[in-house]
Length: 635
Image (cartoon, rainbow, N blue to C red; front, side, top):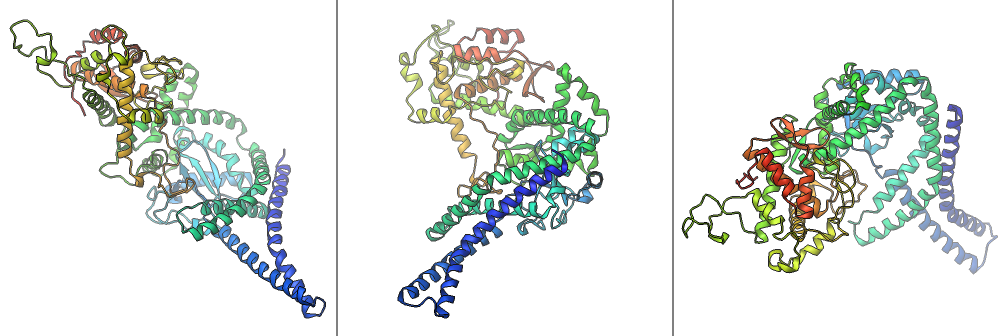
């Protein structure tokens, strides 16, 4: 489809959308037209008699009601604020080279230049219409932008027609200048069709209908207004359904015309750049789920996420021979050099990413502070492991599991040790306590044999049902039973005996995991105030409702127990053999022993958790010299 053909298709579909608007207006005016005819007929003596008089009154009242309702619907559609993507606005003073690149690109494509540029913490780029009066000029603080990325004044003023160019921030840090220009070419080319009056009017109408549906869904109004909003929403949805096919085809035509126009700009480089788009997306997703999410849950937000993407993808190219060619590009000029202060922009987009994907506050505070990558191992990894270890021992205390005795304590009954552990002096939390509890004495035991050790908690059934999903392990890069690489480079095969639909091979492990799930759910509920996330009375499509895209996948209780046991092992390694917490750009938190990343811990922990077999883990502890009987420092 050529440029002209795509534009013609888009314009034809836009006219179809506008015809729906015209038909709705005609239907609203039809009772008024009938009333005018009846009134005119009565005044000229054609429609006389009591029946015509009643008809004139009824039709006139109906016409007034319909006109009033149509006016209210039209007012709501015109005044409702369309949704705007949360972005970081970039002033021209903060990125003159970037603005110059975009304008030169628009000149080469012979299309209008975008009115402004904004960044989003996502691997995508698009044009966004912000010509609605509610969208400009922007205030220093707004729900869709973070001020201060480059200027303390208003970041920019939007023109009446040209849309805003939204660029994914990971592209600026990972891509080179030429690659960014090639990727943005088809996006910028879309400003040409956007300037066509019929297409612009159709888009405004569809966006207004969508905003009206969202506004009418607000349940916080009084019953009378709620009824009126229900009627407005019904009308808006009806018209929106009628426009759906035409609007979709219109956008396809616009995209086809823009892509065809962009063929003349760096076509060969665009093929290479598209490979970088996929790679950047994979690295960004990995960084958010494996590295950023544990920090967010600890009340810290990494302030250089975009720079972390470069480190993660560079590490990927080092490990993967197929990606070796990607690292050779790093000698070229990165696109982030087009910014005057890339560090400030990176910090602003990192904070916005935390808000979008986790629901964190808009500003730093005592419980929400930035963390540099150099501080990440100590401030996030160490604290996370010790917090998990402390939680594990609290749950063991709740279950009545005795602490390990101190082998150096004096015995009251002579030189021989007393077989009753209650006469020994108890020491602090130890890894041995966890190992002994999860290892059945005779290999296999059932919950019925030790009812007192497990207890009956009425919340366990509810907690198990709430945590039945599967998801990522934010602490150790373990994605659960999906066959993906787990913590420390091992694969976690699917179909574990500990899955929710399979009876657990280790009842003690299953019970401890269930209590851990209850405790974690309780802490998460207490640590998430409504102001930090999405308000209960706000519709989910409101751009002020955060997090818009939560990255907290549900974890099974077995995965939680695996995380906590691994954390306890890491704490023991740090406190006994001087191991250190580390950061792996692809897998997140990792354990370093003598500066070397541990790569064989996950399957040993899984053997203990799922089968109650502690032999592999104990052999590993002996090999590294880790003493499980020594107390560890908890968070």
